[in-house]
Image (cartoon, rainbow over all chains, first blue to last red):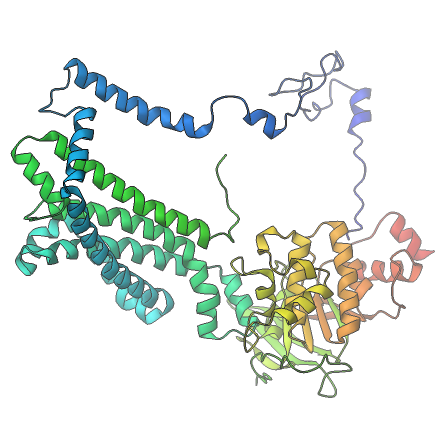
Length: 316
Length: 265
């Protein structure tokens, strides 16, 4: 406890003795109106004075529209605009089919099993590619993140390969792997590996050094430090990488299925292109979007569960 | 020549609570001619230090004087040193920040690093000792600053150290919580009978808890004061105030006002 005595400021008295020479007093926020001395310099205020009632949260929330409803206004409005434009003929069916036509077509494709089998084929491509890419990305990130030798050998190499535009690899992959499943899966692998690698690596290297030191004092060995401190500490970042990876996995699939697909969603789309079936194309785009959203939702749920220990900002 | 006892070893969880002085006779900490330089600047320069088993020593000094560096050396965290250092094999550290792993529940934090399976009963016993027996299964994020620091103490004590190193453990706490935590440390020390080195910048805290207060300056121990006051100590008693004033003078803080007047009375 500090025993240093701070002398009481004598400013108040000097100010009264010689108000002209004294420096202006420290501005006080929100003085009651009329309470300021007429000769005192006007304090700078940004907030008007007076009183306000602090309303409890539960009273405030009751007002207005519930958030889920409010959030649906935007998408529903866009859908309504689309329908109106199609209905009035401003948007021809050759340019973009109306939402009603898209819905009907989607229903038919689902009913005759075309859509189901296409989704299955595409989801398998993403699944296989994701699995291989996730293993590769995680393994490389662990080697580079945990060991200095690994860092020297891997990090610069991955950084260099990262600079290659992976969509541009398609021709090369066709030369290497032919036009079957392999080039499509390979493209997904590439798209998954990099975001996972960079995020896990950054997560490992971003682990709080003070916690590692504490672990060392507690008697943890090298493996114990990795298992109890480094890997859990890298998890938040790894999960961000996982979301990125899944997003780009679906994107890679869309690109991959534009070339020589004999089945899958991309094949449906290419076929529709030949006959100007914009309704089928839109159905396929919606399916891609829904599949991407579903995989993202799964990761988000997993994140909520795995990171329940974390105290963080939830949004205002 | 650097004599390190060895790396920290975890205690045998089956052994009974140890009573009496540390296993080896003589000193718990023995330091001779310790030098630690950072980029050519000697922060610790020829320092000698002895701590007896079971002795409570407080180390005072201005920030940057090297007191935390000394603690890190004794903890075995900094080995880039010259000189002879002997410390007990069983030692534990409580840092200024509690440094709990946020992804482990409180009880798992307490027994982290102990050999064998994580022993919840053991963790709860030590948590109960710091008054947190009911909070064993919560996440650290739900603890207040004072509670987290108490968990950190339990985590140190569960290792049954012969030397407990406290690096300004109350520095971040508010005055009321700090006072409670200081009393707790005094009680725990009396019960566990380990040597304690408390690094602090709070003179009152040092005089309140320690058997001996050291003042560090210019890389060495510049001043030493035995605190021969009966416990529990009364911070208002004249001998207490006199000692505090003397130590403040050693730190170059001229005490003014009523404190100095009391001391001279």
